[in-house]
Image 1 (cartoon, helix red, strand yellow):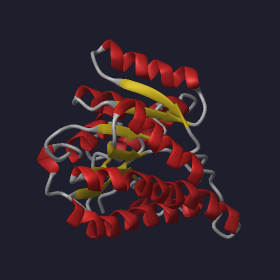
Image 2 (cartoon, one colour):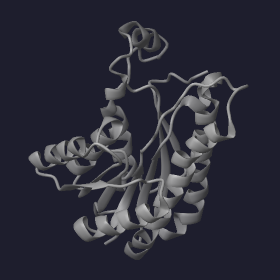
Image 3 (cartoon, rainbow, N blue to C red):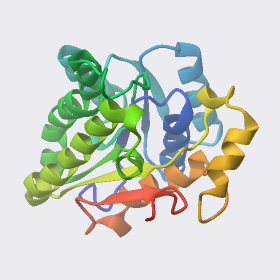
Image 4 (cartoon, helix red, strand yellow):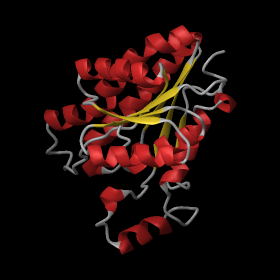
Length: 251
């Protein structure tokens, strides 16, 4: 039986907190053994694992730098040993997103973003691919952003990298489709998580006022989209970019 009908091990990068932690819990609720991957913050990762186990799910925490080739290869092998072959890959890890005037952006600024949103996804896909092919299929979901439509001048490096990331999604969807592997992007708007704790309430109010649904999104909104895309119900959906932003980027 292929991954298209049987939940397999799900590896979620950057899942010790924020969107990744909620996605990990949702996929565990769906029946996937879950690899909670983090770069720092072991205590937070173990808390996510404990939460999953408390609800009857299966999870383990794994520390890895997902921008390093050797580390990614070792990670996917360790997850397979402890939880089973990775057949669902959720590329969620991110790094700092500084705001820089586009006239002052450096090539290093671009490289920093491309490392997270082009290099790391490529390494992860390549490491997970053999098991997906062997099992007759798999799911890859990249966590993108609606920033591509918002055209924010001070976010040029981040925006360019996020656009490149979705281009990978489309190319991989075409290339890996014959292997039964679907590849999609979930593109959230501004979804407040722990790192936004110091954002003034009036800033969120102003943002929500510009959202057609008149509210901020919550992590569960993103997790629900990921859950759908890795489910059997989405077996014929690939190469798509689903915005989860309450219509905020509509023209």
